[in-house]
Image (spheres, rainbow, N blue to C red):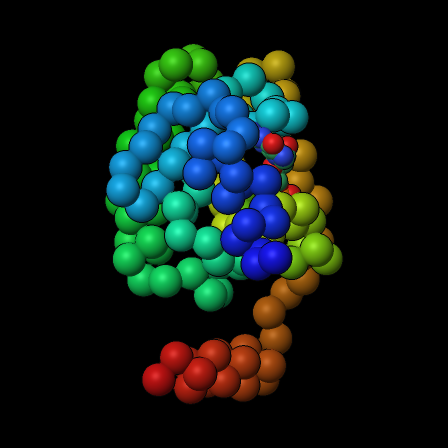
Length: 141
Ligand code: 5GP
């Protein structure tokens, strides 16, 4: 069985499983997360299957980018939250559980509920920065 058939989100997109839908167009479906981190936690999902963002097709990427701000505004307006996180996990080690690309819109409330983030930052070293920036740029061509 293909990965497309296997994921829970593919089944939701095909209408085989229910969801609380908030938005739909030809390429995108958005619905409430079944285990919300905070009230209004919404998932924005491309209809075409791709396990992770780096292998998502350009049309789906553009379609997601077009609607993320609009859906975010609607989540804020509906919940009264004034801030939010957009989270997108890729790979099991990066906390991805469902291997069909999805963006979380997670409202953050004044009582502190919302996404908790561990951010282990370090100072960028110039030598390493020059090397890695050139390497990434080279891979884009
Ligand atoms: P990930 O860790 O892969 O970025 O997040 C997957 C998300 O999908 C989780 O927040 C989880 O609660 C949500 N989820 C898993 N199964 C279902 C489901 O059947 N329906 C809905 N609406 N959300 C789901």
